[in-house]
Image (cartoon, rainbow, N blue to C red; front, top):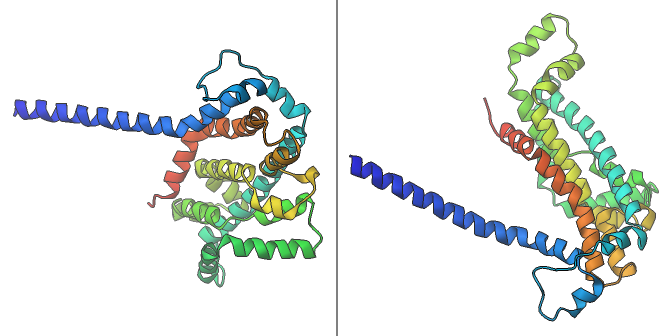
Length: 285
């Protein structure tokens, strides 16, 4: 028995070591593009172009590329537009999602099940078809090259409504009935009981929506051709074509790093809440 335990312990240690080795190799493959992006951004234009064989480090780093990213092109305008777009869109989306999820989870009204089934069926429609319809509608309403046209199609999310509804339904019905006996209104119950209990999921939805808005590319590219309304995802393409030029890779990498850092920090700070919110949303009972 003792010999078998020792063998099992040794086998478990070897398996654990093997897993760590494989995960470390995989991490290197995943993180290497980020390392190369940062490395390229601190190389001077002359140094980068003089390297016939790419160097994996530099002895003379420079921050001039980052200075050029804000002085040579309007990167600050793109960042401001994206921040405004992300904040306003996320706030409106949260309002729509919370009220819709509450209605489907707690309120009784005619056609509730059919309505929710139809809502879920919208997830089956290809996104390209929705974009075409939204573009035609926005153009007909004169919303091209406006923040309203940028924001409105992104204020609803069927998946987030479903995720939050599942969370709301995990709250015992006894709490709702007790609150109604005490004379608590539905809105007060929502804000005082349901939202605090489901706070991890709401935080997760908020963070994921901000990331989605920050990375949005296709719709902003369609709805606006005015650089005053460009987001960072579209701004990078504009910078590449009409800013630094296609050959100035270090300056481009500096702009990409500047745009990527906020999202990376956001995920690193709230990663535990994101995981907790998603796992909670997928658990019943």
